[in-house]
Structure formats: C-alpha cells, structure tokens
Length: 387
Ligand SMILES: [Zn+2]
Image (cartoon, rainbow, N blue to C red; front, side, top):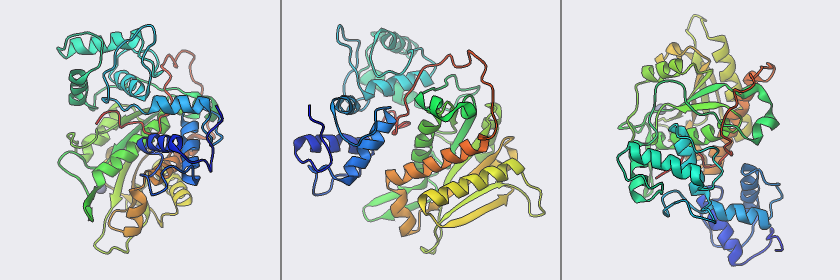
C-alpha cells in the first residue's frame, strides 16, 4: 500500500486519528478530523517510537498493522485462545501485563493470545473461583477489576525489559523505583471545577504515575506504585515511605499538584529531606535538583525551585526521595497544560531523564541471569490497564 502521509485526507486518516486519540496520543478531534495534519504526524511518530517501529511519521503497512492491533481496549471484546489464527491486539497485551504484574506466567507480553496466556488466565480463574476455561470475558474482567492493582508486600515479581535497555545502557537495569501518586481513595487532593468538568489532583497524578511507570519499566527499572487509581484505598504518607523501604527502593518519587487561592500562583517545585539548620539528604537534594531542572527545561513551567522539608514521607524513606508539585491546579495556565496528556508525557520524560542522570556516571554490573524476564514494550498508555 502507498503510505498515508501528512497532507492526506479521507476516511483512512479519520480512522488513524480515532485510534491515536484512543491511545491518548492525539487530542480529541477538532473540525478537520479527516486531515493528516501536524498533530497527527506527531502522534504517529510517538506511536511508532513506542512500538519500536521506524519513526517516519507516515502510516505504511507495518505501522497500520500496529495501529490496527492497538485499537482494542481491554474489556471491549471477549478474548480466547483461537486456533489456528490467534487473537492479537493491545487488549491482549494489557491483559498479559496485568497477569505478569500479578505473578502469572504468560511468557512475554507479545499481544498474542496464545496457549500460555490462556493457561495463565485459567489459573487466575481457578484461584478466584471462576470456571477455568482460559478465556477472558465479562466475568473474568470483573474479577480482574475487583482485584485491581493492589499494593503488595515484598519485591515486585516482575521486571520489564525492552529494546530501550539496549539503547539507554545498563545504568537503570535492576533499579527499583517507587512512584507515589499523592492522595487517592476518599482523598482527592486538590479539586478544581472547570465548567462542567471537575479536575482532581489524585486522578491527574495517578495518570502521571502510570505514564512514568511505563517509561521507567521500558528502561529496565522495577517499578511499584504506592496506590492504584481512585477509588482504591490509599495509605498514609508514613506507610508509603515504609513500603518503599520494604521494597528496597533505590529512588522514591512522590507526585502532587499544588493549589492556591490566588489563581496567579503557578509553577513547579521539588522537595527533598532537610531541616532549617542545614541538615539535608545529599542524594535527595541532588535528585530534587535534577528533577526540577529537567521539568523546568522541558515543560516551561515556572521554576519555583527546590526546598528542604522534614515531612514524614521524606524523613522516613531510606533512599533518595523527592516530592514534586507539578504545577498549580488552581492556575488556569498550569491547569490547561496539566489536563493535556501530551504535556503530562513531557513531564514524565523529564523525570525519566532526571532518574537516568542520577545514575549516569556509574557503571553497574548486571549479573548474568538477572534478566530472566518477559519483554514488555513501552506502552505510552501503560497503567490504564482496565477501566
Ligand atoms: Zn497533594
């Protein structure tokens, strides 16, 4: 087929745009929905990058196949082991990732519903008291939703690897990062009405955390979130810190949004452990400086600098720990940016860059065999597995 390229119009472009919008790579359609415009090209490039395809901003046969597979959201159809032509799609990959996170052996998350995935589903079904037929329909989806992404003790039992490791080098492989989306459960954090909409800090920071999880995991980092999406229950700050300690985390990143009665207050600030009389966590301060610098440089948010605090979250954690207030939800300027998924991706890129810099000069041996893992692709929308 002739690649569909910038400047093209027609139903195929509409289709492409719809899929990219569903993946949060493109803002919801404006009036020119059948036009392959600059935003579409950007979204295609981001999609190609996330799927390890050659990045040319056009939709040829290979990119089209990947887009076609990406259109399925988990729960939209019943999944089963079909022979001889197995079902494939992004929903299969989401299911596989979810099962891997829960410790089931699906091999690698290759987006193909093969016999191993079917067996893992059957095992899950047995354990939750469903008929173990190995297919994933509404009942199994409900059970998956009910169990959700719980915080578990002990090390996460999965480690993700991808092409990105070979590109970015071994510095991050095997590190454990705990990401802490602030608030959650019955505590929404800052809530700001906006016309008929209502933005909550807890939802936005959870989305940020999920995106960050996907990007870090693609670099070979073990990632654990301190809570699931609302309305999951949530832990007090002290317990979040202890969780990070029990996981032996190398880095702890807490994500919040700020708020102020004055709508002119705006910008990003990063906090690390330290007291007024100069006692400070040196590594925490370094990480805070890197995070702050990268976010300011990559997003243009106003620089509200780094600050030392003795908050429990920072005091009880035994690894470099920072709390980032990524803009003011009460500022119309910051808010307009924060509600845009592409902006949130830039914030995430900045944090990933900061974590990488934290380890950049240090070469670290990765023991052979420690990468006995499934290979997961960096999914731009990682984290929003169900619902
Ligand atoms: Zn907060």
